[in-house]
Image 1 (cartoon, helix red, strand yellow):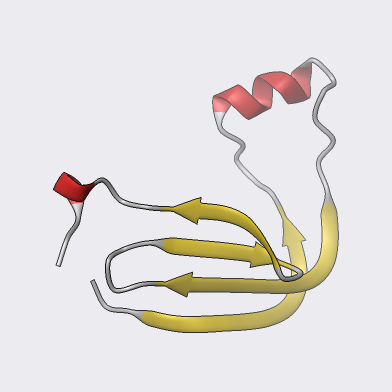
Image 2 (image 1 turned 120 degrees about the horizontal axis):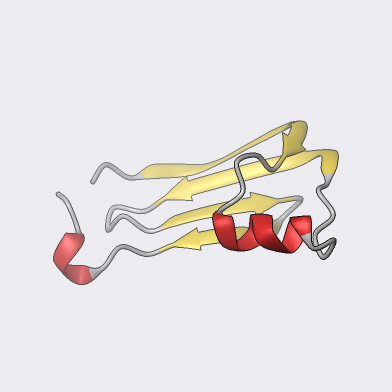
Length: 71
């Protein structure tokens, strides 16, 4: 996988299309959607790991399964 260096941009951030598990919490009233203005950062490593940061804090991390890694 092609590596992409850490990149940041300031703009409007919202969470869309919630996974079913999170959506059900939202319907029950346990989820409060947030819209904010801030710094959005993303980095993709050569081994396929991905980091998404909001205002310098890791928000989402992804690590591919060893058997599913693509070159």
